[in-house]
Image (cartoon, rainbow, N blue to C red; front, side, top):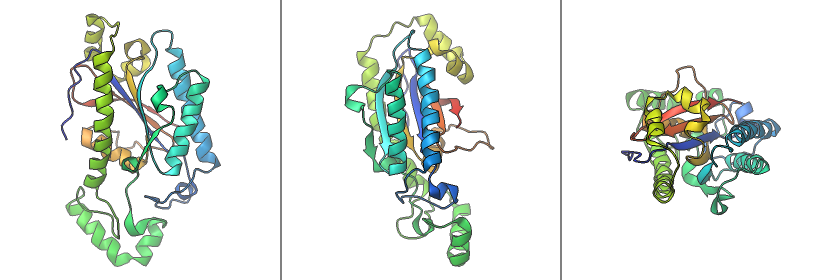
Length: 267
């Protein structure tokens, strides 16, 4: 799915947050679509990333208000609860989404992969109990990773997850473009030029460049987030791990079709 070019003179900002830890994460069990709640550590992780974002954005409020345009969460409770914790911390700092988005829009399309027969099991348990199926899946995945679904009823492929994540992006992108068309910014042409010259690191550390730009917050899942990044051609370092309650700050610069990774907020 081809992205549309950002024709405005401000970047679009997407805060992509993974849910906090659950008991299945701690036990290294496949969760997929199983609706597992946050554990106490997961709640604390969500509070930490919320506090980090609230502190960052509150420090920039004297320059421009945060341009909230969308707030979306997977409908699974571990993501929904993470979103609610973030919302509460932002509200405590007088930073909150617009009236229509004070609670996240919930959608199945931001869910993790459906992992078929693997759900609820550890990798070792599945490989032991279903060794033939695992060998067959592993062979097919090596030959065609994008189209090979997880084994068992309901198992999804990378392509299927990418497509539904991109469906949500289409909705958010419409809000970005609508906001950009109806909002007059006070940024000068020289500042727009600064965006094209700035490195992603500078865009994160120099708040004056983009705080106040149209900003969306999604709360999703690690595997699904990686599929969205892959669809957009956004690379993480090979050793990078999207931990529980980590936040990826993505920015689409003026005149660009692609997103850039501005910062990885780790918890």
